[in-house]
Length: 95
Image (cartoon, rainbow, N blue to C red; front, side, top):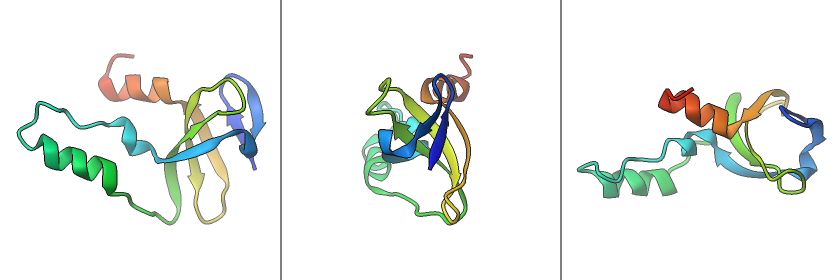
């Protein structure tokens, strides 16, 4: 499986480690009144979707960048890959 790294071009998936759901970029606010419960959910609850899904991939054997990879979990087709830092900036509205 080849991953279209936004900076380095196509890279073999064996160069990467998968962390899991890209929703991990949305870390709960520790000042919330329900922060303990929210953080517990953040750490321990995961969906196992069938179909198109966004995941965090770490380029461990390359430039050590974090990517958000969108892929189909049924066919394993990679639909897109972007730097996690860019995704995070868009989420925070700082881009």
